[in-house]
Amino acid sequence: LKKELPVASTPLIRRTPKGQVFIKSTLPQADIFYTTDGSEPDENSIRFEKPFLYAAAGTIQAIAVAKDCFASQVSSTEFEQLTVDSPVIEPGNTWFYKSAHITIKCATENADIFYTTDSSEPTTQSQHYTGQFTIDQDKIIKTIAVKNDYKNSDVSSVTLKKTEPASGVHYSYYVGDWRSTPDFMQLTPTETGTVDQVSFKNINVNKTNYALHFLALITIEKEGDYIFYTASNDGSQLYIDNQLVVNNDGGHGYLEEGGSIHLTPGKHLLEVRYFQFGGGQDLFVYYEGPEIEKQEIPSAA
Image (cartoon, rainbow, N blue to C red):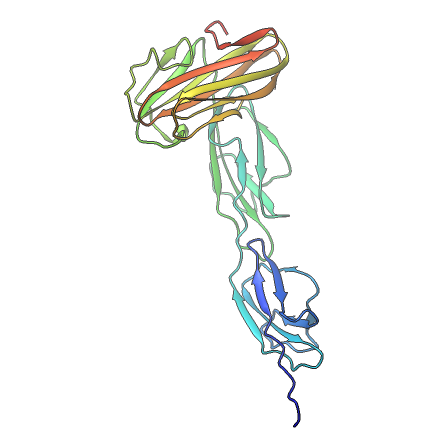
């Protein structure tokens, strides 16, 4: 009896979220041929040798060919057009002292970034981002990222406000239900005022469901590495000059976290974010550095 040849297994086509296409056959010795123009593949089509980028909308078809086998059935997979990742603007919604250095990043490799600083919607005719830039006034920055064969990204936006707190610690008090420190830039405070230290002790707060935002200028006498701490129940975050130094966020009992930063002599913007959900409530802010033992930041600083 004449033995019939087996049929090569149909290849599997898949695409990663970043657009890399992999085509695989269960037969290790099989050659794979594919098309991206809608035509049916054969042995004269493109040979698959390594993953390739395919971001456009369309259909990829492939066959597997192996010795002593009939060619496989055609495998066909339809893909939607990929969208460029939304750019990330750093710092995010926040306050700054004197000036802020703006960086924009996009996770989609080799994407072009365009931005505006006047709150208008960005297009490919807007300012082309080529590197970090500095602002010294209130700004609403909006940005998009584009790349050939991809859909343009969604618009990313941040609001940055210049501040120069006078003596003391300026606070804003908010009532609400949060499980992490909120975006205070998007909220209207219930009350504002000034206290001597970063603490709720001299503020008339609820026992539950509130948040506090603190801004102050901290004076650094000697250059060096400083460690800041927040001890809180529930969550807190501490920023120096828009840089997150301590992340003690989230709903939790009393917990202390610390982080270090190198500071030069002069005034630096200290920002503390805190929220209280329920149960016990605590907030203490400490620092230590050159010739300074760990202590609560004093009002004199």
